[in-house]
Length: 342
Image (cartoon, rainbow, N blue to C red):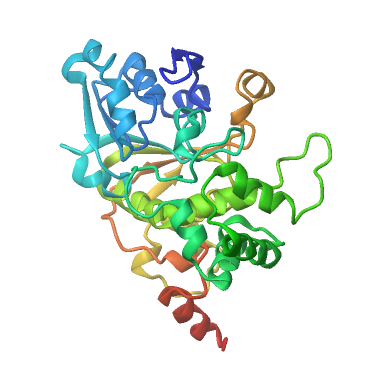
């Protein structure tokens, strides 16, 4: 299902939309698209048979762009400005399904002024909501240790200390204000990539974007909010784009389907071991070769789907889901103390 991306003029193809519709079909009832973006998933759900869809996005531009086509769906489509971490408050009724695409939208990547990409020069911004602390604010004000922690824990960047040191040295000369400026600093700390390898700044840009947008907090709160919002039998489909967020989603479904308890049959049963989801997809679903050829940005994507049970929603332990935490955070210190770390 293709729709034109208003910011680039190219067809907008939702990632893994075929496998999603296969996993959740036949589509019916009331759905929520928690990462509305260019509206690709929302349109696909409406065209597949959803009675209505609530589209949620914290990026004001996403909702502005939708004004050109949303009226064709009438009252079947409702748009809400907000975060998907609050999706249960945005739903106006119990939901039959929720879809979350955790990647940066093509609309954001293709606009140099948004500062998400090092492919084009632009202001170092990266704010999905276009408000609050920007990437430039973070890069120019955070301590060298904090920068190194962000790069290591949120980007799995092994050269985090070297890169943080280079950033601090560069900003002592002049503020770092553009994407290519930062990308050049990072690239100068790493070996030249071989053909086919990703840009040296990829991990660093990912880490800084996650920090600026508090993406892991949003993800955990969004998954728990989805558990509250879905009616029994309702479906939750989540598309991830890197190993850290996929690990969180994988462990969430394992934890909420009772798989953690089944791993140790001698452990006493706990309330949190109650199965709140059953697994629809057995493992992660990846794009096939045709989709990757048609949409190269789908290459790293993975889909996981769960179906809500009748068990009541409950609290979740973020640490048990492997959520990366900075050493300066209270949650990290608490977890370290429990493990006997100093």
